[in-house]
Length: 65
Image 1: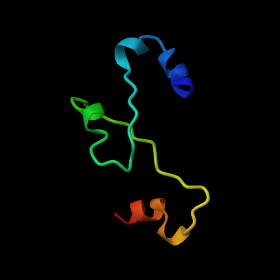
Image 2: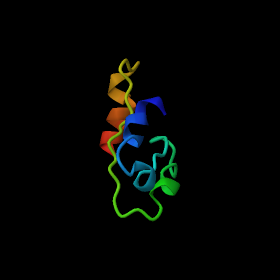
Image 3: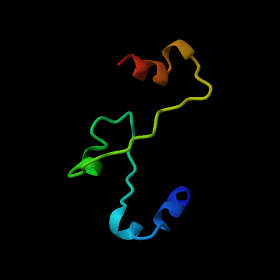
């Protein structure tokens, strides 16, 4: 949680902010995290900076879905 500590330092963060870890590649891994939410900001994407097969990388495949 070192990378997110600054988020928890915001005023009232302990009352209003919950952080979850999920894997974009695992269907259903976000289900519990978004249950009961009114809105979600999703700003992550899978990245492979050196794909062995760029034409069939995860990012390319996700863009096609």
